[in-house]
Length: 128
Figure 1: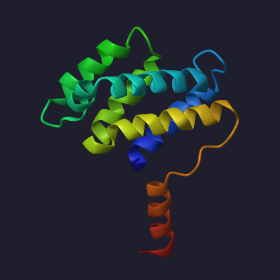
Figure 2: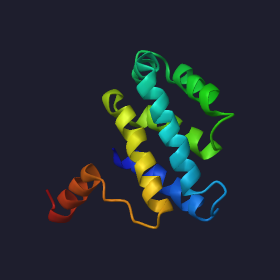
Figure 3: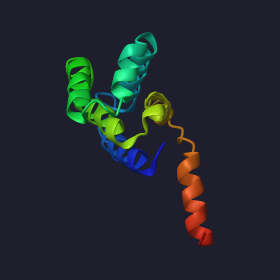
Figure 4: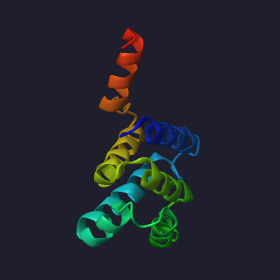
């Protein structure tokens, strides 16, 4: 997962953490896990959302139509952001990872550091 998406998800998590049970980590995790299941069961949808030849506005419209009545607005924003910030072949995995991170936060556990972000931070520390 790239730093930009992780940063955006962290901001959403901080906001969700202040909301408690209603609209909190658990709901975000449920929404993202449900969306992941939809992607697993509809390979065609997953391909379409990951296809960079389809304009972002069209892919965003599909996500908004699918999730607007079923998920928190924060979830919709996060998935739309992932569409533009995540390489096509990593989109499904990024959504699944975010669901897991929110589930950990819900249970009071800190999420593990993202390996890509940790590697980048290590490089910056050592000046590479």
